[in-house]
Length: 246
Image (cartoon, rainbow, N blue to C red):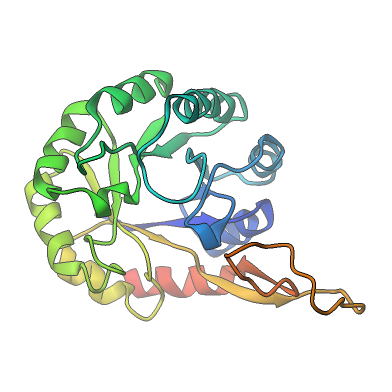
């Protein structure tokens, strides 16, 4: 079975690079330093116009946990409809209960909103209580895939659990390793886990074109980033990763 790469793309620019490198699909996100949140409608539309490969969109109204209030949940439903309107091929989301279980009712309602497009349960899976119970519940709900680092800090560290999940899934749902996947470890991950889809960012930092730089003023709060460089996916790193999977 041929193996494919999904790129976690933080912009239309990164999405274009992902396609150039041979990626099968992008997962379009905003706020990467916070783990990814829903991108703007404008970003969705421009990305859809700019690439010919598949585009999934993350549906996550904020950073932090995956226990959503009623008003956040309403926003998620609207964002799924907006992503479909923008031409998304799939949506990526996940809701948990306060005690770390899959929120069956909320996820079922979001699945109803997502009818007609692909669905991925994102790394909320990595902070749920029982991954094997969650696996069966997500299969029952009809999700197409689970994005996971194997409940560890990265997919390499979680590769033992990922391999178990692939085996237990037995083709009923796609188990897609993500977090820390790159051209240097993807070959070993594929061999160890038996996974056929992989999620990676393949980004490099691009220096800002600003020549005037105001010291002592930051646009961020507690999440600190270097505001004079931009992380952008590069086709070179995507292509290098695909070569490792051949």
